[in-house]
Length: 192
Image (cartoon, rainbow, N blue to C red; front, top):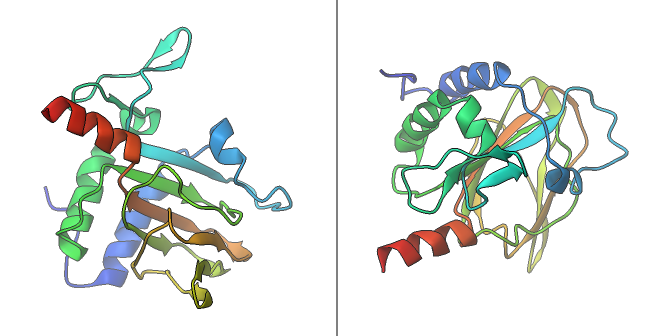
């Protein structure tokens, strides 16, 4: 099944946004530590989609084993399995040579300055929605650059450069495609 046109990034972003609108996006404890507590925006969250090395959520709730040995699906992946096909088609159209294992899905989530310490290599980020503001700030060696990522991809190494989001008004989604060090280590272990 084909989900996107492939010849209109803005139209394809609206299609992807419609899938995100159907998802219930909430934040776990670890992710909430990075949220700006002064942000009063309603209906917000940040969820990891894809794979995890943690086989349990709580003592009595176990995760679904994935096709990658020693790895499990995140709760978001279990709840929305079709989104993997949608995201894969989207990335194949717009950055086909980029390998990712996880997606951070954010809705109305104003994140504080941070590094992606558990990521490896470059990530690709893009945002969607009916919002104003919300520029991505990245602190490079020569200073902070403000980047408009609305319907535009930006590739950078979030483990190397501190980054955060400006204030915004409206409904703002962003998705980040990336590789996680621990997942990459598990994959390498299983291949040896």
